[in-house]
Length: 110
Image (tube, rainbow, N blue to C red; front, side, top):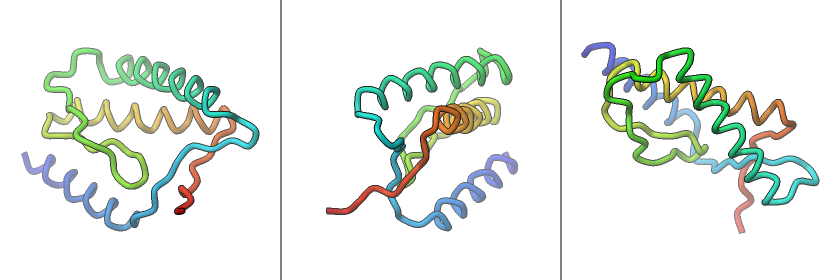
């Protein structure tokens, strides 16, 4: 239980330090349909790899309750394995998107 609160505290500090900038994936010359397709492919790949590395049946897999200002998922209460899998999936998604040439850029305010 202490580990959970330490992780939660670390996440809260990281979110606070990240600021309030909204980010989005961007690649020069790519339209919304191509972005959606690439993002979908990366999500499937990341989910499969995370399940393989951490385990497909981690009990009490966290449910995503929202996203922070940088588009990272915010998890509800769960056990360590489920949270680890969700965070690994998020990291793998970023690796895949960067491998396809995308970068996270601030959303322009209008």
